[in-house]
Image (tube, rainbow, N blue to C red; front, side, top):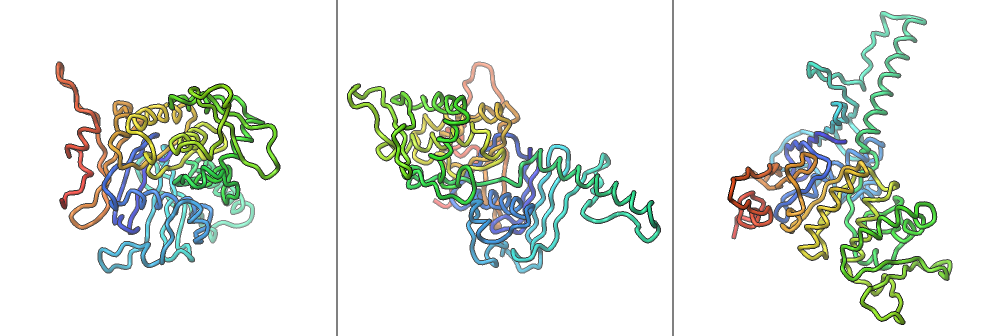
Length: 377
């Protein structure tokens, strides 16, 4: 998993370091920089594949704009955008960007026991002093060591597949299939095709998705019709309160909340979706009490499926689904300081006092105890 994230000189993020858990929630006022942090990770994901073009960035959830606007402009300086991502083994990816057309410098790092950083992207063998077979042996050992560290970093972080999902009702309802990144596009594209694939190859996974969907009280089940035309994309959804003769309705007649939950549970439960991803505004179209329960359920799924996730929200009800005594679950209040720089403050679990009922996180947020609220009105 990603353990440490550092971003400098990117949009509103002047200098930020966050120690992530497995299940992370960002909350804060509009425009405080929550999405900018997610974009910083997505840029690292693109850079590790040497694909910093606009098309690749947009497909990963980055709001692509003029290049000069992607660099922080709090003061005139020549500093480049800097991103450093470390895993639990202190192996990480470091990136400096002058422009998005030119990858100025990048490399994998190994943190030694005495905290000295060794840049493995630089050949540290004195080729001048070594000749013939001895030089080839040292070079082979170096390359093998570097490849081992790279493999460890890829496996433990899954950074190269990071996406920020922002599902939209339009795509979820149409079951749009044309997508750039499979199995699920960042706006919900490809959902029907993936459900169909799970039905065929992983029915036990689809059964888990259906079981989780019972969070919606009226939901009884859904099925993929056997009489679909070649270009038809539809599921039959059963409402337990409907008369038997009415049978099913399809996703075009379903409410938004059901479609969002169908997408989220597919994303979290499927073994074919990314192991590390983010969802921007997960509370969209959901009832506050459902938000709390959803977070509780999703945090369990993340542990079970060994994934890592970052969620952003504006809805304090989301917070009540967190268990901050579990260190894998972390809440960060994102805010902008007096200079306008995006900062992050981790909210620690409340100390319990015997005989006193603790204040719910949602209430603590609304009362302004933990920050993240506008102060200008």
